[in-house]
Image 1 (cartoon, rainbow, N blue to C red):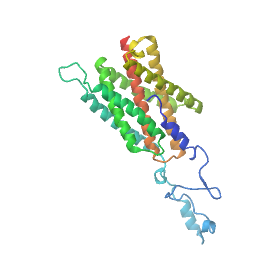
Image 2: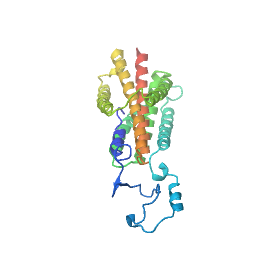
Image 3: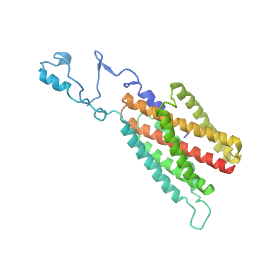
Image 4: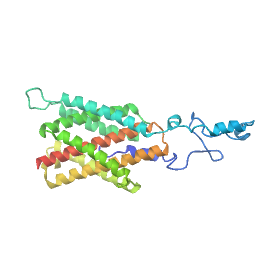
Length: 301
């Protein structure tokens, strides 16, 4: 959850599409349109490529006057594709999270959390983490696997939110508002160029995110072994670590926006809309969890 390898994969695999490099070439330097795509512009002249005969001026003018093929016709990625897939996956996450929230609530008249809350929390957390890497390094876009990942993230989100809200009433609504505000702020900052995403910043972010994920796993292991954890101890150190996590998750959104923009501009295949939507939702979940931690630590202090 602390890193998102999906966008690195898309950047690598779209490097051959228009906008990232030279378009595919086919004999004589002519651009080869995708299979099944309607031809744009006039056909080759007489005698070229095995064609014979001639065309009248009226026919040529008609061919030149044809509207260019749309991205949908050529099977290329559009921003609408990414938005729709993101909303679909986000809807799955929210629906499962809401169902899990109500399922793990304490029985009426009891103050004890449902004993299934923690198992659901752990299965959702480690299951979605493992699937995120499986999806990122898979040789093909596995839509069913992406759907299962969204379900696991929803289960994790619902369980962890219920547990946190039981200890810190109102913390969930605060984290949701902070996540939405940060999402909007990061998008505007990236759009106007205030926040830059470069190849160097991507590499630095990737190394820092992997290190942060290792720290989180060690912290979880120490907690289960009875050594305590950094967040429970509170203090300045815990606040600084939480702010670092919020900053990392926030910049992850800027990288997501930039990667989506590059993929759309490059004319990447439409199938990548699933990967892009999956990565964007994963970053949102990560940011929400970081805000939950930060607000919990602040209330402890």
